[in-house]
Amino acid sequence: MAAPKLAPLGTIYNKGDGISMAQEVGAKMWHMYNYESLGLLHGLSFDTPEGERSKLVLGWPELNHGSVFMVVDDRKRYFNEAGPNRHGHIFDHSIWRVPCSHEKPYIIFDQKQYETIEAGQIPYDKFNEKLIKADTLEELAEKTGVDINGLKEQVEMFNRFVENGHDDQFGRDIKSMAKFAEDGPFYAIKMAYNVLNTQGGSERNTKAEILDVNNNPIPHLYGAGELGGINANQYQGGGNLAECLIFGKIAGEQAANVMDEVADEASDKYNGINELADGDKIKDVKLDKD
Ligand SMILES: Cc1cc2nc3c(=O)[nH]c(=O)nc-3n(C[C@H](O)[C@H](O)[C@H](O)COP(=O)(O)OP(=O)(O)OC[C@H]3O[C@@H](n4cnc5c(N)ncnc54)[C@H](O)[C@@H]3O)c2cc1C
Image (tube, rainbow, N blue to C red):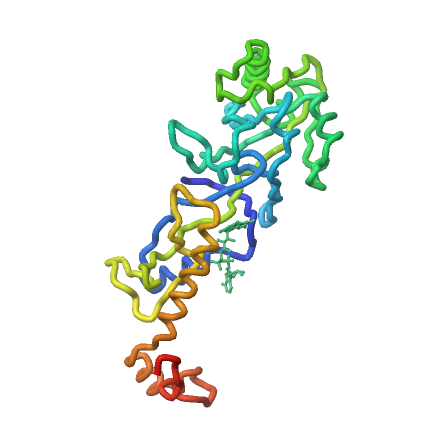
């Protein structure tokens, strides 16, 4: 799923070097379209500056229960804000999908909701810094750059659903919805699509061997973990760490099972430890199986 920008929830030191290294040796790539997200609202968390980690908050009921909803670029709601957390996936025509990303996702709420939020537990110390406050919806639209007609229409629609007892847009539980006040102030918070982990990278087989573009193992090259992980599409929670352990063990065993030509090559060219240091020849090293 294409996303022009994603806010990282994990390490900010992974910059794709593993992909470049695999490409250099002609490895075949797989799962490059796939990533997982998580958080507050179906794979969205607070917008953060480029290069900063985004905050993972799981469960903050005041941000999806009450006179509060989320809009995207066309100023319309995008999903059932109070729906179950599915690792960032959104229910779309009978399947849970990685969300389509948008440029301007915003949480919108009124003064009553703001007071409810303030009275509850706030699990994010920069919450107040992120708030955009306006006396009217018109002013809020101006401050956020959103289309005022779309925003007004969405508020009216949301209020009508509450009156009628049914969310015709996304089937949000009516008990989790409250009418927006007619008068301001109103608030917005800029959100960002986040990335928890990707599965993209070099394809490996069951022996953890990295494959070339013709599906042949690249000699002496093994892989484990999230770079080219085996999980794709309908990710099962826990799958990533499981494959780190499982493929780490397989890859380690394969690499330690040095084939003869590698040992000979290593002995001829250098001492088997590195080209400079003097040390044991690799063929003299005793493996457990000997
Ligand atoms: C918040 C969060 C929660 C998660 N929860 C779960 C969970 O509950 N269950 C689960 O299964 N998975 C979970 N995951 C995913 C899981 O943690 C990762 O898939 C897993 O840790 C990946 O391990 P790895 O060793 O393959 O890669 P990483 O842990 O990303 O390690 C790669 C390392 O390489 C380093 N590096 C990058 N480039 C270079 C370079 N050029 N030179 C040297 N070093 C470099 C990086 O600094 C990093 O230390 C979670 C991830 C996050 C972010």
